[in-house]
Image (cartoon, rainbow over all chains, first blue to last red; front, side, top):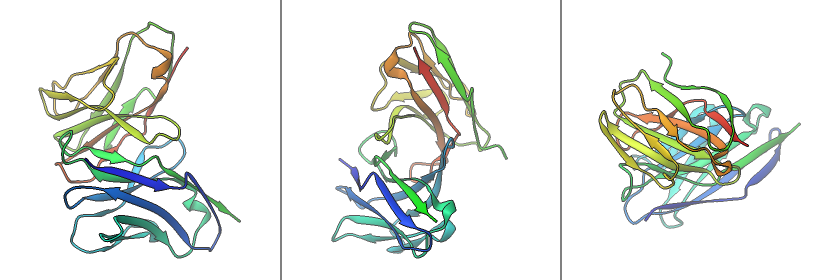
Length: 115
Length: 112
């Protein structure tokens, strides 16, 4: 069965600092992995996705994530945080054994950006 | 292009009341999903559909029902509302099994 663990429910960084949001997955087959962002009172928006084509995936708004099979990780990074990055971020993996490709989501990490 | 549209945005129900959360998408997606989001818990799948006339249970289906009479619409029905159903509900769709999900903006439901 697939699962996702996001380390840290809250992360706080200063504006201009590196953003690192951690995600570890468990999957018995090569996974499809996703990062989504949720701004207050909105639905989730896709940041980026990993589908085995390349281990370093670039997404929107300057975010990127690196797939590391040996570490079963898919951490999200951004070199320089902006105030507008304050949001909740969710890592997700495709649930192959379950509901027709349903995504299994981590519990989310809330990112705060200090001026 | 409206994407996934959910109505209403907010609703307060009394215990035992019923309501239907509406979801419609204009992207001709076959796959549609209903999730609930509770603080610190991520998203949990309630029901899903892989096409008109086909629905199936997800992880937390108790107390809910769905139907899928058309490709566009996927309403979620709460028959006897309970306080445990206080949550934010998201509808999502995707074109096929490994493509990204497209989410609506959610319905915030309070049951008192």
